[in-house]
Length: 159
Length: 296
Length: 150
Picture (tube, rainbow over the protein chains, first blue to last red):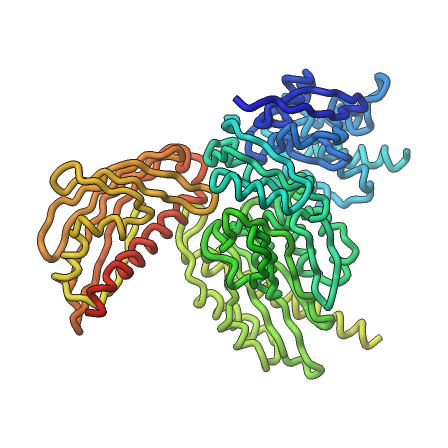
């Protein structure tokens, strides 16, 4: 067994100093060491997108990173979307537009959409579909998810 | 599954990285973007006992232009190429190709050097390197060497890179300013590995005759290839629809793909031809619109 | 998975047969073969390094020569196990006389690949199979050099 290595990560605004084995995947670190179980493990090979989190404001697949690689980075998970009890516009939109059923893929979609909408809010439906194409959903058939992102974009545009 | 245990190093200079490779030999593996390596490690298909993470070598992330060539540091992320104004201005083919790589999250981490050295036979960047006659620079304990794409790719997932070398730079010549270009690929779902793909570059003279044609194909061979028969055919011709169709037909006879779980050899041949014609159509249209803009 | 390959070697059929059955030279042409040890009549224990890129495995297994019909054909059975999976193959090797003191080797093989590499590494399997066939023929060509120049 390899020696544990020290890492320092800021997650949802809070800095955490922990020790991890190099082989520990970032998604498992978040879930097991930090008890942030909102990020899900779907396929473990980077296809389904349910492990998506934001690292330095950009979407990454946390099942394809080792926790040690996040040393010094700023991470945001789905738990960090709502502020002071108020839902993020994306979360409001998903709720209003029925953008989820079982909810397994939802955190991944929210973080992918967060990356998208923080870098612009004027997208065509096609552009939104392309941006979300790396996240898989088995329940909804995607239509309501696309609509949720469109509604969220509108909310965020209005500020 | 989870990866097998390994020793982890995160050097901050190229020399450190090379020294680590020398020390650990074939048991060591370079970790760049990880978008291809980590899935294999998660499946335990690959079990390096030592990982050399080069993401901390900040000197290897850059994009700059010199003497009409783009010099791209090996750990430049695909996403950085997408958003670079330099790339947008001087290499539309590279931009179009990079946008087809996987999905946003993959492009956030995936690197240019990593993608090229991984040498996936269906990848986009190796085809673009072939279309533009690009090169890579490799650094090892015995110094550095610059290799042209032709000499770099050996077969599936294999380049001439030695276990003790790392790629530190990718060099891509600028597109001629009056060139038209296009990248066409076919995937079953957006972001999947390509079944086949074509990178096309066309230059025409004032009489609308082709003076230069480049056709690089991915997915039909163990390495990216240039469809030289079709390229030679196009030079000197007027680029009518009939000519473009014939170029597509030549490509489909020239390529020799294999059948596999994703497609039969015949289908791939057909696909390569059809994608060539489409790519040429868009490249020619771009050529015309550039000429129109220059006349204004 | 079926694999077919053929190649014309510039040696007589008898010479090709001799070289292919020469136990002291088998390790030269079996792809990736590090060690070859006789463990019975026409039966060998072999260590073979096979793979492409990062997917390399050291396969420990056996090579068996059977159904010999000297000098026109025989069967080669190969079986190996490694971390990425297992490989089991049976190849019918036909030697056909060609004009100009040459011989055509026709390989007709049935290969099963299982384990990890078959379940999650499908993209690599056909590549590795083609690579092995190419290597095999190139290696035989190489090991025939003393005979072709003679």
